[in-house]
Image (cartoon, rainbow, N blue to C red; front, side, top):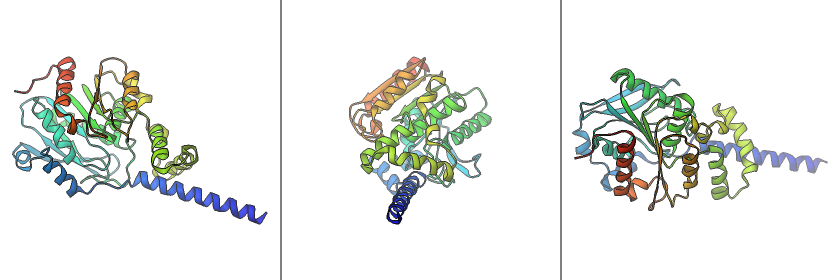
Length: 306
């Protein structure tokens, strides 16, 4: 009896320890070195410091509803009411958003880039893969509309976690932009975690997810089940362009396909031939820009680049 009790105790202790490790990995996911991000983008030619510094812009501190500052940069080279907000992916910073901002600046938009909570210069203690981030995005949108007026022609571009955050914002809180570009989003966080548990941990998801969900509710006060863009995608009425690399093995392209199928109303889907996760722009730049132009021509009627 004692041996059985001891074995059960050891099993429960191991299960709890695994759950704590799992939730730590989520809440405090290791971020990329910010200097390395800067170096990577500069060496790839996607960020030119002199060119960026020459643009009319200002640093902005936007108070998050969770008590920290969201650090942003508002870039305004054009006399226009056209704005794009860029939401970066997990482990990145707003430096990674500059290439997308430049793409839209070339098309007559002003741009706002910002750091998610616990990333870059922004505050916040944990990463929640869109749950808390969607409220911060709403705060950013509200701030921009308050400062620039309600009659903006506004788009939001999100990459990876930023794309999921954007879809959760639009589907759960308010469909507050005129168009959205979702680059490699996950459709459901629980499904995404189940895939990664099998792929990286080599475990049966049903053994780890239940304890992970309980601990995450206790430790970070939200449920994995509520981080589900596909469950709210039908609430988004404005146009969405879904982008995904066909070779993405971190967030599978089937997730963007599923989101596209469930989205009602105006939508487009572009599956990039080259690159893996979050590399559609980097590895397919000409096609990426062509699809952006087709989407804007069809749904936004933009000022095209010279």
